[in-house]
Image (cartoon, rainbow, N blue to C red; front, side, top):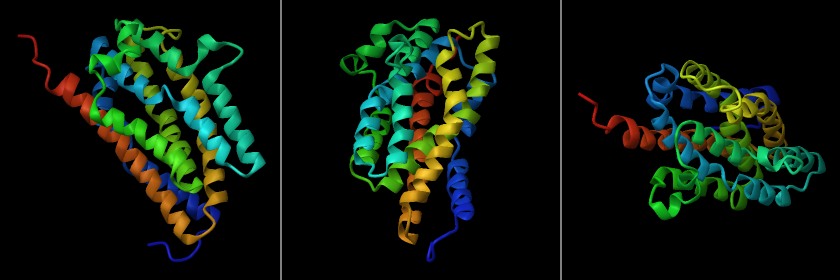
Length: 241
């Protein structure tokens, strides 16, 4: 239990340790993907679930932006928000890049945009999306920054490269995988900014504890989302004779 206020270095280490302890890269679905054991259809089904989770991210970031009382923190988050929405090149919006990737995997775009009505959204995917709304609307700002920027964005630069390498061997090109490249390139910086914002708002031992717990919760939520995808589209799929 945190009883005294940790120094910045110690606090950063605690946040990063919480992010690493339940890392999505160690999930069986990620390992199967990285080892080339999934087919494009299975990967495309992941993309449909991931799209449902990230589609409202710009609105969620906007909600968080409105709550930040610090100018520098708002400016950092605004850069993140613009990077999601890409107003100068709207075809490069991150959700749309994910749809482009899914189509390269053979998934019809209707499955992305109509997943709710088609009954395709898995419970843990719905929970993941709801968790982000909870972080930006209800939780303390220390938890918001930690749970989103440190935990979730912070895992991607070490998660996606293995995915990309496997898919390159499957014949996908860099344009198909643009969604992954932009996150590998941008989210390391987002995670670092997230550490700074989290530290700024975690100005008591109790808030530091809450921030660390938010990182743990977010990593557990993503793990469970992958678990449902793995069970639905990999583990319980009959193998061809």
